[in-house]
Length: 84
Image (cartoon, rainbow, N blue to C red; front, side, top):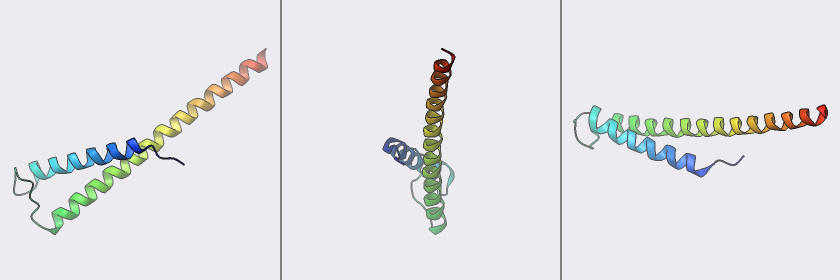
């Protein structure tokens, strides 16, 4: 099983961007990129990890959808051949 590298890099990019935005707008002290303690670091790392997992699952779903579409096209071609 080959994982498309663009999916992983895109997921990491979005995860880091969202984590920084979350830190800037919602964590104390507001409007800074400073994490006050260990709990905030754990939250940021878990947030990035969740985003990467979701990105991988989405890539897997896209790949399976492409494979299902290919199989459907193959079955349609076989059906047309049998009707002739």
